[in-house]
Length: 185
Image (cartoon, rainbow, N blue to C red; front, side, top):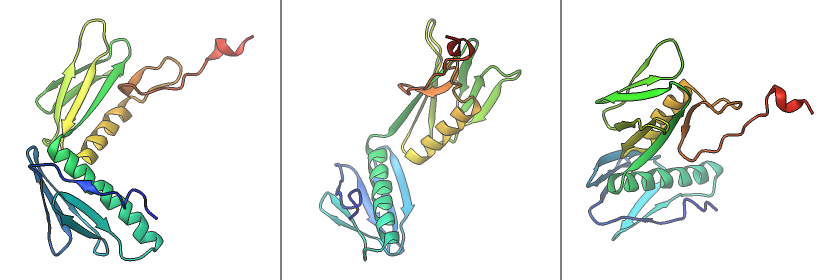
């Protein structure tokens, strides 16, 4: 039994969902429009402001797709109504972040600055306050795209375990190692 797939999706006011005969689900809301192609075996039914995702059999493949597509549709509904936001902090001496439009400039301790073009669907904001770590904030309606861009930014300078320098999400716990001096006792 798929516990995620069996959950209902509550559709907030102002959000409309259309399912085409080819199983293309389109979600429109106040923040924008998203669409996702659904597998032909999975059915999506709407009754009032409640959406349910159903599978035809109890096969392992159908169970997996059931939970997957329910989560994808739910993320689309939340995205067009509320939106998603990822906050990242850059920790390290001399590390900087700045943006001009959707071009992100990062100084991450390399001999050169890194310029990254962020997709136009995502809003980028940077903050550099004195006494605090530089911040990069990504906002948009597509959760997958925001996660992918955030992972790309994080991969430019992953957090190292000895001093904790690098790019991390706000609130992320990093396991630290003792180093050479920690082993001598």
